[in-house]
Length: 392
Image (cartoon, rainbow, N blue to C red; front, side, top):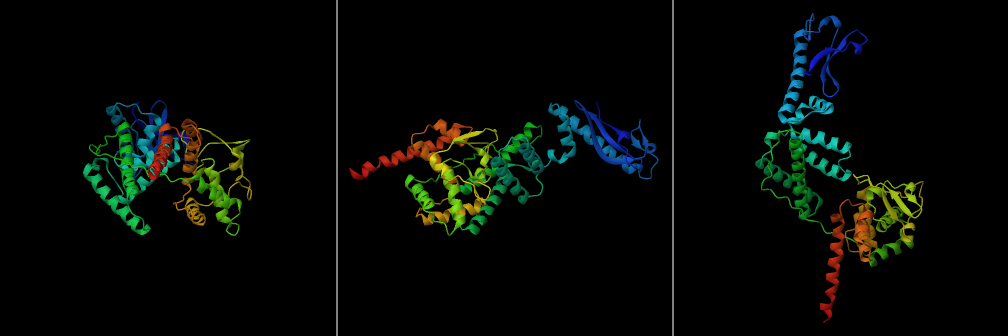
């Protein structure tokens, strides 16, 4: 049914005015607001227009714009060969710029996908960073303007931003800088592809562009280094610095369970069920429940403190504290909280654990993600076998 304008007498305001709604039937009745309200006598039902008002001409122009927009949406859908749902029609009507401005489309689709649990929290945050960078680059980005030349300009601007940030932080811009640049382009490509799937005539300026990511070295603790930290904890070394002691406790617990800091920060005593941790990890878009057996050593770090199991601080302050702890323990490594997860995974395999079991414990959806730890342990074997060359 073609869109039409109707006076919703059943929704009359207290002053007697009735709202004029745009009506369309798309698998079910759809009513959309036009923000125009008139008295019943001021509405001509068959001609679908406002009458007997000094501003009738202006109001009718507004109503015709709404009607034209609705017809344009339906015509475009037929040309694209797609069948709109009622919600898709509402979205297109409420956000006409989504088909023109890439940044608006990116933002709308990002939050829509996150709300529908299509994106993990980590992926959402990474793509939100890309969106924020695009907004800093320009306020509006028409689809038609996204060309290889624009991507080149954007990449140069982004590189300059990274260089300035690197200079402020005093850190060299090396492999991670290239990965960050590629992450920006990868996310743009993802949402251009999504736009094309949704019938928007979006360009594809990535022909001949290869986005290669290099894996950062995974830092983990050797058994002797982990023992140093356990000894410091058992000796109450940080009794005079209670926050360092608290950080060390939840870091060590993660070393023996593989938990991420996002789960440590939301840790609940309810997760402890007998000799297991049973919970849904935050970074888990597949809603898969994890069951992690608790070893005697892991249980050593479990007790309530001020009504909660772990009293945590922010990720940034946690990592700052871990660097101080590493210095106290004479561990010459850049200790961050994620080192705990790498330590757990590496030691699990070195102690004879199966890669498939590790996959389940870490909550990886794909075994290939877990395989990186097998590569680490294999590399260690080659390094240690080379000791023969040092003696013979």
